[in-house]
Image 1 (cartoon, rainbow, N blue to C red):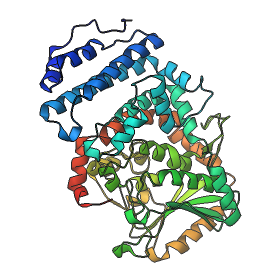
Image 2 (image 1 turned 45 degrees about the horizontal axis):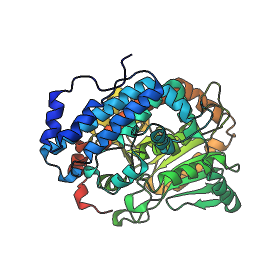
Image 3 (image 1 turned 90 degrees about the vertical axis):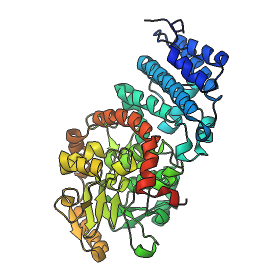
Image 4 (image 1 turned 60 degrees about the vertical axis):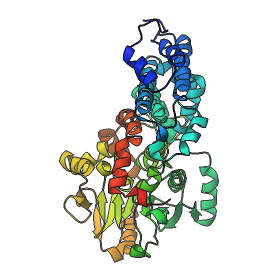
Length: 473
């Protein structure tokens, strides 16, 4: 292996970029000379790479904030970030096994994504941004951020790509949240739980989880993903219900007064104004949605379909109005979809500029590849009451008869008991989406979504298609 250090010749174009941006040579040269190569020894590489990232951060700080940079400064900032990120790819490519073992005490400790990324930064300085750096970026609108969270995506991509580490992190993210126990006790005492942006109540033999974000048409954002995960866990753990329903609450928009809508997906207004963290995507895909898909894992048993066990129930989705983006993604994780005759589904990834969660993996199972690509890449709308829509929706009911239809579905699916429901769900998963396929998808998703989340194209799309400049938080 090559030795860590910076003895290699310095590219003239990199020096020129920094000098043209107004960075003094005495500040640029020490950083460029410190550019490391992998030695293969963890402690030695930690020291060398951390030095490189520390000096690089100091050089970046000589530049104005992103919104005030001229063309030369913007080019220099992009070059610095690109070099730092390539170094992260190199370091993690060599040391992900050692790093993850150290972070988890050789796989004996579970840590969720949202804290693991900061634990990694404490162990290897500069590998990912610090909480203070993220807090500063959180104050900015999306277009003015440097995208420091991309470094978190690089870390997660390497973890998920490494089979033992990726499976362990999937297990950690599927464990019951500590706070759920208290909320479950409240629910069992009263038969209802209101978490503000999510709620649980009983309807016959079913527990009903309801989205409640009426101002934003039941959109998903940082204000409700944790509450939804707790609500989903409470519904799964409720001993007095046999099945779970997912539906949207009523909204107050003048055109929809008193009506329910399922979900409008990610809160695009919040996204434009920089209020959606990169962590959101994993709290969504690996949080409440994966609870619906795979249930709650046990600490002493891996959440796979062959050797592990989970706590889970069958799920019904009740779709009123529309299921857009993330809302449509949920339908691909449930067991039965009831939809109103005027409801529709879209996955407007092209107009948003991001990857629509797990849909690229799951939607083709329902619609076939061509329709899936049309929906994701070309914004094809799927009316629920259409031949294409019925590939996803199991039953269509008149809009004004949805409550009655839902009760009938619950009664029909529970009338003979649900003893085999979980067994059949696991049997479907092993053939369609075993845990390793899920993990491998996440490895691609983690890196690609990070770059999409901070892409100039995302801002342009939101301004063009969402008229984001005109909207207020």
